[in-house]
Amino acid sequence: MHSAQSTPLAQIIRDLRKRKKVTLQQLAERIERSIGFVSQIERGLSQPSVEDLHAIGLALDVPSTYFVEQAVSPHQQWLTRPNQRRTLSYARGITDQVISPALSKQFIMLETLLEPGSDTGERSIIDSVEQGGYVLEGELTLWIDEQELHLGPGDAFQITSGVSCRYANRSSSSTKVLWVYS
Image 1 (tube, rainbow, N blue to C red):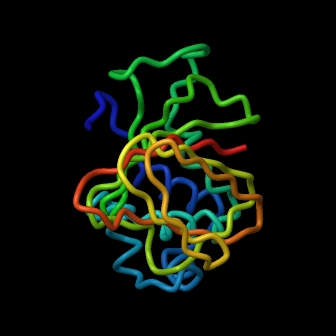
Image 2: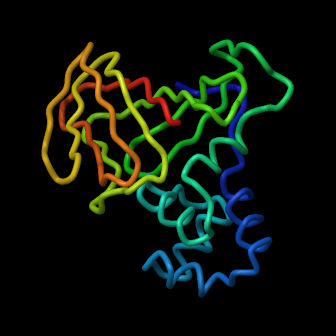
């Protein structure tokens, strides 16, 4: 699932870090990773995992949706078509496609594709916004406050802000989830 328009995530992260006057070493320390790891992400040589991108957002004092907001073209106000959507690819086999035509600040919609065996990482993510999802296809394992839940097509969930979560696709086929962030 490749889109015609790839997001320059490395550039967004680098520009934000510099604008916040944070050194590579400071950012690496804040997210508990090596300077080399952060440098590779900023040069586009490595993709961060979902948990790494969340940690970078926290370390640079921006909401997790900041990186998605930067990906959407401002001149498309009402609709997006499949070949016009922006894509954020992460390490560990997860890809988000921005399906919101305009980011009204009320909510953002993503279609998340989880390859077989993919996950968000070892650490739980605590988001500052409310979020929910609807499993379109495949199987999703979701941990909310460390409670393990198994979801299939048609299952939906909602997570209030400040509650820890992480997710994975433990199956042998792809999983798609419609994700909504407030």
